[in-house]
Length: 331
Image 1 (spheres, rainbow, N blue to C red):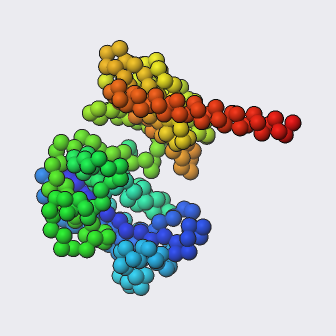
Image 2 (tube, rainbow, N blue to C red):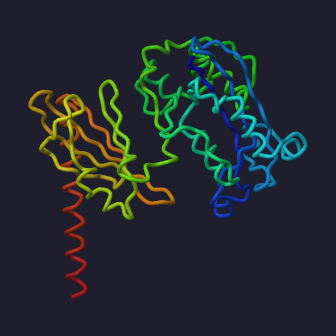
C-alpha cells in the first residue's frame, strides 16, 4: 500500500550576504517537518527535528523574521544533520521495498535543498532515481486556477479551503501539517496524475534520459553537455515529436528564443494539428541539460508563438545593425 510523506523544511543562509555564502551549501537546513499519510490521505504519523547549525552560526535577519527561531535555540535543541536525516529516512521507510513512498512538498525547492545538504554532509542519497514527487502547490493551482501567473502561497490556500489555521505558519512541522490538510481537503484525485520530476540529479548518459507522457503534454530530460550551444544544437534535443502519436514533425517555425532562457518552435502534425515545442536550458556543476516539453495547441497559441518569433527576428536585426555601425565607426 502506498503512503505519502508531506515534507517541509526551513533553512538559514549567510547573514552577511550572498558573496559570503558557502558555495557548496548556500542554504543550511535548520528544521525538518513531515507528515505521513496513508493511501486514503489519512494522517498516520508525524516527524520533526531541529538541526544544529555548523556552517552559518548567525541567523540571517530575514530568516529570523519569518521562522522566529534564534541561533541559541538551534544550538540548544538541535541535532546534527546526519542524525536528523537518518531518522527521517527511517520515518519514510525507504528501505521497505514492499511499500512505495511518495514525497509531497509545497513548491519545488525543498527536495533540491535537502539533497544538496545531504551531499555536503556526505549522506547517501536513498531516494529513488528518477525521483518523482507531488508539488502540492502546483496541483492546487491546476485544480483551482485563478488566472494569476504567481503560485498561491500556502496560507492563502488554507484560507481558500476554510481550513482551521490555529497553528503558526513558517515552521517546518506546522507547514507540513497544513500542506497535508490541503491535500485532504482539495479534490486531489483529478490532479494526481500531474506528478513532478526532481532535477537535482540529472541523467548521466543517453541511456538514463527521461521521457514522460502526461495528459496533454510530454516531457524529455537530456543528459549533460559542455555548453548551452551544444545542448541546443544536439539533434536529439531539438527534434520535435507529436506528443499524441510520436510522429517526427517538420518545423514550421524553427527553434528561437527572445531571452536566451526559453526556446520555442512550432510543427504541424497531419493528424493532430499544431504542436508547440519548448526548451529550457539549465545548468548545474556538471554542465548544461535540456528540459523539453511538447504539446498540441490551438491557433491562438500558434499566433502567440509566431509574434514572439517575429519579435526575436527584429531584435537580431537591430543588434546586427548596431554591430555594423560600430564596426564602421571603428574603421
